[in-house]
Length: 94
Image (cartoon, rainbow, N blue to C red; front, side):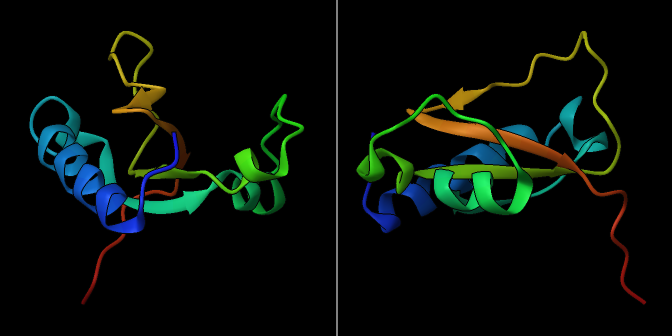
């Protein structure tokens, strides 16, 4: 699915509302919008996609404070968008 950016921003806000509550709040740091092309280039994800248009599809990149346990259900898709996870640690400000 290819949503307009505003639609993806709304889905991102909904995702954060849902996944920054217990038990997920211990793990989820934040969420950003990216494209499959960037995910492949910057994060070396591998896709079975050959269509150039499909590689421009938007997706969600969720940053984690720590690796979520295997028994915690986290989605690989949310409302038609692919979801990717990166463990970055706790980000703190002074």
